[in-house]
Amino acid sequence: MSVDEFLDDLAHPRRAEIDALRAVIRSTDARLTESVKWNAPNFALADVDTGAAADFATLNLRPPTQVRVVLHTGAKVRPGHPELVVDDPEGLLRWLGKDRAIVTFTDLDDIEAKRPAFEAILRAWIAQLAPDGRPGH
Image (cartoon, rainbow, N blue to C red; front, side, top):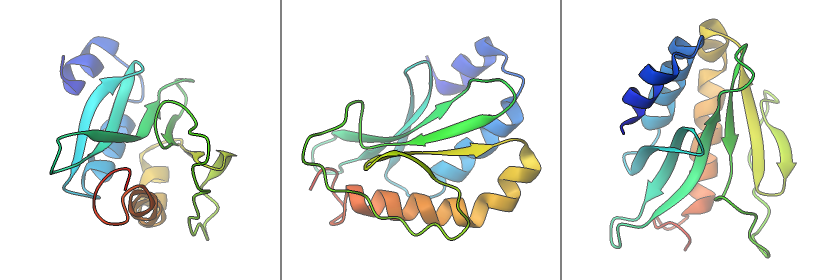
């Protein structure tokens, strides 16, 4: 099932915000793939050599009054994973651990206002997942 089909079936009250965030995330890096994982849109960085993908962002669609983007380094915390360092002058990140953070958006205006800072965060996050352009290296 495609992400669009999944969201059509879900009929989420923040569909416009979900689609706007999907577009922002997809525009950040040409290597990104999108799928449904953990009952939500999920983004991974594809390794062009192996075809493997490193999950790094998942939308959290609850509660229905907002949309959160969970930035992570995969499904489980990896022991020994270095702490991610991301410049966040706007204070968008709420850190859940050394390799997990949440960014919360309330509506389309909020997304537009935070877009430049959020895009910079995404680029920094992706760069630390794949500093040489390959996931996990």
